[in-house]
Length: 51
Image (cartoon, rainbow, N blue to C red; front, side, top):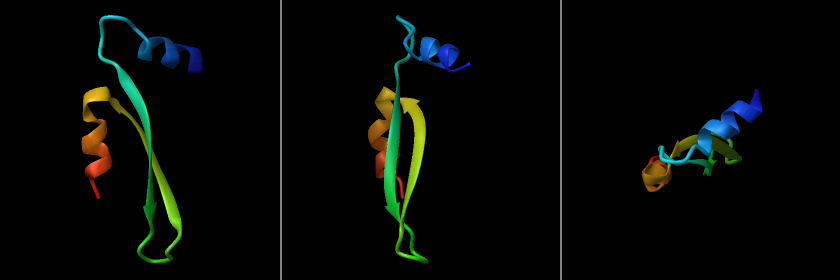
């Protein structure tokens, strides 16, 4: 199943996607949490700017 996902992400002529991992500090415990998502390449800065 992973091969299908990789194949669709690398399709030429379509929208390019990027996997983004964002590290945030938890306000309750102070520990770091990681949020990851697959977003369009144009929206990477918007994803990282969100809180």
